[in-house]
Amino acid sequence: MERKPLIAGNWKMNLGLNESVSLINAIADNISHFPEVDVLVAPPFTALTTVKHAIGNSNIFLSGQNMHWEMSGAFTGEISAGMLQETGCTHIILGHSERRTLFKETSEVIDLKVKAAVALGLIPILCIGETLEQREAGQTYEVIENQLAGSLKSFRVDKGLPSSTVLAYEPVWAIGTGLTATPEQAQEVHYFIRQWIENNFDSELARQIRILYGGSVKPDNVKELMSEADIDGALVGGASLKSNSFVQLIRFQEM
Ligand code: PGA
Image (cartoon, rainbow, N blue to C red; front, side, top):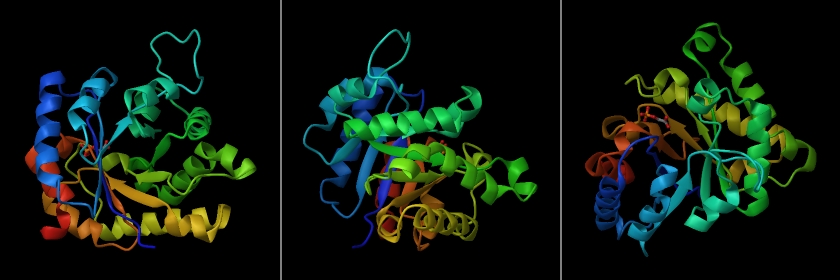
């Protein structure tokens, strides 16, 4: 079974309700006859219900950008997996580098979140990636391995990581900087990640799991990245906020 490409837009803390609806309408108009690629958007929490409504019957998956690991309770300012599901989310981005660095999320906390998401049937998009200092110090693989081992700790013990789980390799030095990993650099790490899944889980899961690349993905570099054997899609920030660039990314095969 071929892994179906997934192009995912992480809107971060951007776009108001009107802009969100216009963007969804423009995407939906352009992808209605495009079943070869899965498309996903991750708007801010406050736009989820509006975006779900705008998506209607078109094939666009809805995702949260973060969540708490408990189902409910006294956690001011937090959102649970169940609440996300109620808005129509099928996916949840977890462990984004902005969460890890700006909000001090550790792999232990991310593991709790992945576990809570899977327990409810939300599909996690687990992000991992090294900083520039770590890459220059030759620590890329060690960092990736530690993040994977820590963020999937529960599953290494209990197994049961669904094959629908998505991993996203996002070198921190390439996020929002205009610097992209070369397709070869990205492929090397994607291959390492797939091997790690095979060694720590099994070869069937390693064959099925989708690994996205993220970090300054744009229409002019997407095709080359997507031509690598272990790159199964893209997690896109900046270029997902405008319909023309996001639609070009979705249609990378035509470029
Ligand atoms: P970028 O962000 O495409 O703006 O570099 C990617 C991400 O943070 O997911």
